[in-house]
Amino acid sequence: MGGIDCPHLEGAAVKLSKWIRERLLTSCQVTRKPNRIRLLVESLEDRCVPANHAPIGTAATLTIPQNQAYTIATSDFGFTDPNDSPANNFSAVTITTFPTAGHLDNNGMPVGTGTSVSVADIVANHLVYSPDLMGSGSASLTFQVQENGGVGIDPNPKVMTFTSTTNNQNTPTIQFQSYAIDAINSDARLFTQDTDSPGPVIDLSVVVTAPSVSSPLKNAS
Image 1: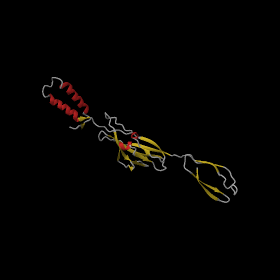
Image 2: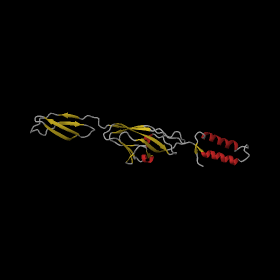
Image 3: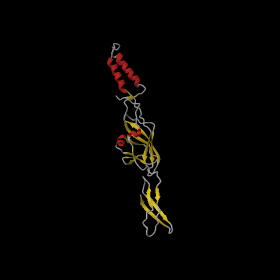
Image 4: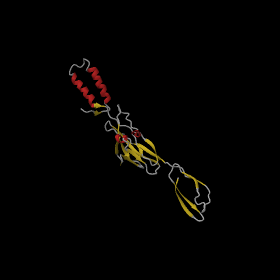
C-alpha cells in the first residue's frame, strides 16, 4: 500500500512501532496472534511516511557589463532543502514574473510568466538574460525553486536582480596644436592626440573661419 503524508503522526508512529517490536513481540505478554500484531506494525510503518517539505530559494543580485548577455547558473538560485532528510535535489525553477527590463530566453525562446525551466536546461547554459541595448541600472525577475521529492515548490518567490554597468564613462579628450593652414601647409595636422579609451570611434567636426568652412573628420581614433 502507498504511503500517506502524516507529518504530525510520523514521530509517534515510529515510537509506537518500536515499542511494539521490542516489548510485545519479544516478550511473553503476546500469547495469541503475534503475526497479526506484526502485520499491523509493518502496515503502520509502511503507510506513515515522512512528509515532503518545500525547498527554499535565495534572492540574488548579479552584476553584468553593459550590452552583455548573462548565462544563469543553478547556483544563482540558491536552492536548499533544509527541512527534508535526506534533502531532495534541485529539479526546476518557475519564473514567476519576467524581467522588468531586457529579456530572458531558454534555448533561444522567450521565457514568460509562469514558465518552468528544468535544471537540465540551466546546466546546459540555455537560460540567458540579455539587457536592453545601451541600458544601465537594474532589472529584476522573481522565481520559485522546485525539488524532485514530489510537488515541493518554494511558496515564497525570490527576487533575482541584474545590475548593468556602463562600459564607457570617460569623456573624450583632445589635445590641440597650432598650425597655419594655407596653400603651402594644407596637410598640416590639427590634432596631436585624441583619445577615448576604451570607447567607440570618435566622430569630429572642425569649423574654420574666414572663410567659414565645416570639415568633418571621420574615423579618428
